[in-house]
Length: 266
Image (tube, rainbow, N blue to C red; front, side, top):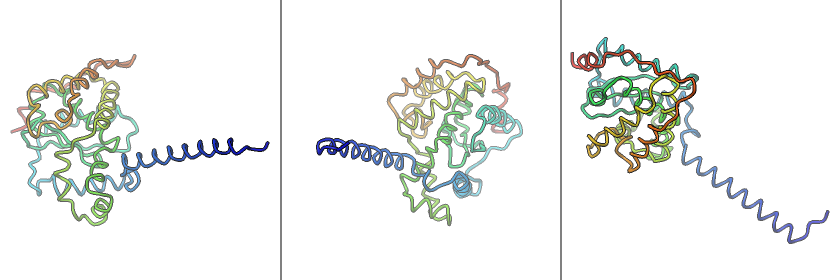
């Protein structure tokens, strides 16, 4: 069948629109997830180890809490969430640091730091687990490492991974890391599903959100995931409205919370 000039023009236009759309999507994906193009999970973990040693260790001035009972409580939270996650590419490491702000933050590779201020703020181990599930969502979606790449540039991150130079620029970014609305929504959704699987009430995430906003909403250093966006109450409502799966059974973590908090400083 002979194609007329008019038909050819329409075919050309359709192909052009398709290629333009595909190209735009590819560019969007690159800038949304640049780390996916340059860092394997193995290299991300190496990057995280380097950051931990240079910025968040005793040698770097961070006071790490090491108490047998506190360690055992953190392990219970870790094991419940890690096991519920199933086939994660990350093996999470949870560390408690003596910092008064009610905060928790993740660094590349699956390390999550829990500040004592957050443990003192939360009413139960299950509330802390809800926050940790959110931080795990940022790790699983690679939000943390992607933000570093976006802010410091591809060349800088490659140089850090290869030779360890410039790591002093990273710690400040991690402590003040404000995620986009899209990133927060992804981390929230991941947390709610994970808490459901772990037998921890997903609505606790929203309860922490609301209480944090009421008590520390204007506090510099308060939990970054809670204080950055005006739609916080909407996120809290979404958590409260989350419908658990049919087989959901709530299971206590079995942690004596008062004893755990007393053990922080002994």
